[in-house]
Image (cartoon, rainbow, N blue to C red):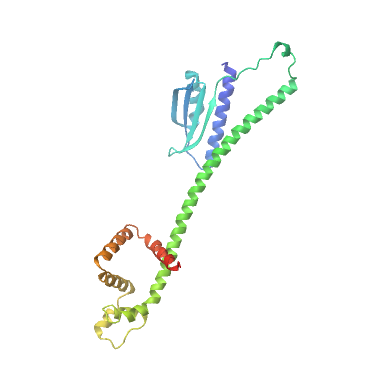
Amino acid sequence: MSRDPLKNKLYNITSACKKAIKAQNLQGYDTIYCSTVFSKRGKKVNSFERAASENFSRLLLTYVESEQPDKIRVELRGENEELLWTKTFNLEPEQEIKLAKETEFQGLGEAEVNRMLNTKLEEIMRNNELEELRAMRDQLEQENDSLRQQLGELENVVDAKKNLEYYSNIIGLALPGLAKMLSKTALGGTLGMLAGLQDHSAPSHENENSEKDQRETIIDLVTEFMRGLDDTQLGHLYLVFIELNNNPDLIGSLLGQLHAQKKQP
């Protein structure tokens, strides 16, 4: 290969890579590393990895001069080794079109040849721009999928909070009924106080118990409920508590599922 065509190819390669680096910078990637593999006749002859983008052109020229490859694969990666852009360039000389002797001097005019060359150059530029746009599209699709996942997680959190508020209201409305049902138990006086059904004629020690706050009352109510379960039910409930203890955020989701099952016909 003569030097002028090779220099032109190398110039086009570095120009395309610089455009790709600039495109990634516009997408928010400030740190970009360049990796290049040089091959000849289908076999790898050398490579360099994680080179700073500002050193890419000088390294490329040095390796091409020493290894004389016929193909170059360039990869642009981010700070976390994520692949941002890749392309393979061919350094082999283009085949020359030989005209038959009888038609050798019947070629196209200069204007027609220039038009064809310009058309070919425009086609090459369009292909390069198309590959860059495809790489940008893939990157934007990945970012869009990540945003969708984050949105779904936020929606789940909001739903869990709504379910928790809903069932908290249900608990508040149910306190009067529970107070009447458990009026003869140790929790009766406390639930009556919370529900507004406190008996003012109750002994003083019942008035002291009625001063428990709502949090302690609910804890006592849950404890009383567990004491009434058999061993199998208590074991199952214990396994549920283990899961909720490891991830308290599941409480809202569990309430939502129970509420949805009740609505089913």
